[in-house]
Image 1 (cartoon, rainbow, N blue to C red):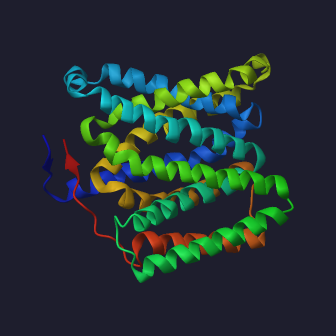
Image 2 (cartoon, rainbow, N blue to C red; image 1 turned 90 degrees about the vertical axis):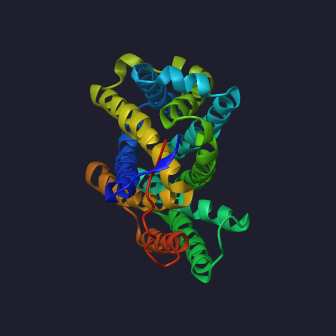
Length: 316
């Protein structure tokens, strides 16, 4: 049963959930970089999302009313959620962690969260699901120009050159996967609750990651992995994965993919701050200009030059 909440808190709650999600995701870039410096990128992906899958399965088992919701969920709902996990967990993370093994976390914390809403908005405009206003077209053009400048800076950066550029291109591909995952969100949630949908998506992606990473995992000297790396594994599995993905799906269900994408602009702020303070990473001058132009274009494209009205949450 669906209805509209009353009062101001009904409208702000999904945005608070999304803001918490962005804070967790932003901090996850630097934490994941610490892990990928010690372990193969495919193994890091399965550790993060395998741990997240286990946490979500426990939460699902302990949740009240789960049996009722389960009986109402059709195999098609389960298949949609699992299919979303293939794109948003398996493919996204293979690309993301591969990129993270080549480029600094500060690059990923800019490219992925900024390009994801740009690509989401571009798809909505191309498919005519939303209007192509002058502000949006200008924003997309500005964002594209900023991306080009950023990638040119990556190729000439002293901290990696062509290797860093390759990593940044992988980040761009992973941003495309996340845009698709966001666009699938509402359809996936049409007949299934957020916790169950998030669990199915994460588990399906984690299983594929485990199969893919098995050969690399056999070669790892696990006894040599430092304790602080394991602490980061626990953090990214629980915070930026299990909790954040659940909150994100709840936010998408309440306000839609376009509005949810706007909140992504918090991630580069948190991510670059954590990367600079914790890892000592930085942009060169060209990358900094590109990142600024890209961010301005993305904000303009998604918001159409104005602050959108907060919608009231839809509860089920």
